[in-house]
Length: 117
Ligand SMILES: [Zn+2]
Image (cartoon, rainbow, N blue to C red; front, side):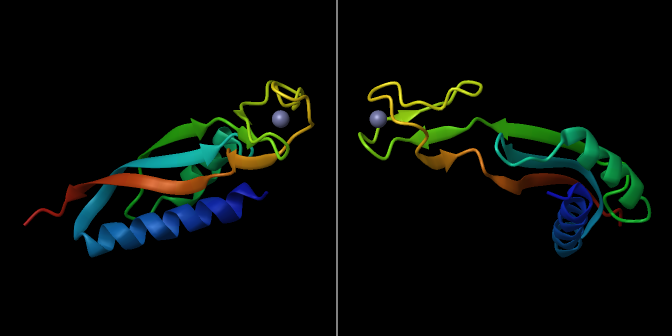
């Protein structure tokens, strides 16, 4: 996964929403990132700091909300959270399953400052 392209997407989404809301600037950006989405918070912060100046999002604080991984066993439909490298179903011992949470990546919300009249 490429954090720079992802950060550009975040910035585009955020500044579009801020413009539509008539905001003068974005103060906070809340991101949801699944554990399995291999984005590194520090890298996103790094690219954000590099790309945000000159946009409405300059100086905004990034908040990262990590969603833990959850699997659903294909054999017995037990839902479970894999621990470390142990991805065995705790009920029947089958390996892995369908990922039902942990791949999320989206902008949950933003906070903006109103444009001054
Ligand atoms: Zn199972």
